Image 1 (tube, helix red, strand yellow):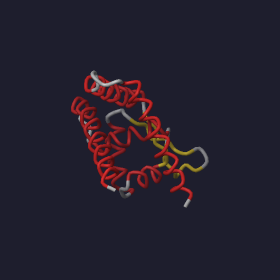
Image 2 (tube, rainbow, N blue to C red):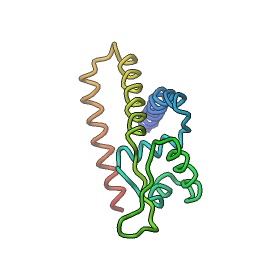
Image 3 (cartoon, one colour):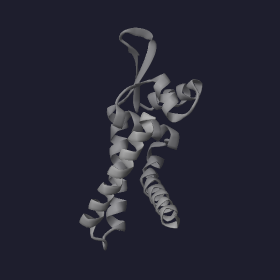
Image 4 (cartoon, rainbow, N blue to C red):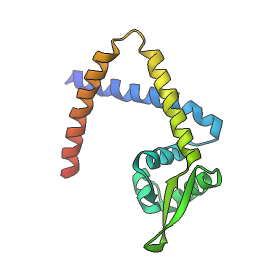
Length: 145
């Protein structure tokens, strides 16, 4: 099905370009893409244990420890000890880390706004909602298997 191959290509390349445009802000903060991914994950999913972070990001615990330590040194995250078990470390995003995420989102929105000036954005939004719903439904079915 050639059409679906083209849809996959268009979604992938569009998402990549929006991501890259937004991440240009990271140069201001001396952050790597991996560090930003951690901040983004914490921003949208709240605090997480180090083990959860390393599993989510697909890196070893020792690699995650180094990434989080650098983020903590920069003031973008806080490491806390889990109330029920002091051996467990929980990481949460700081106010400064949240500012970075918001700035990247602003940059992405501006990039999208500038890119789509000549397109009927209400019709596009309606179609993207339909796509998002369909993909979310299929994704949820995958999670249940």
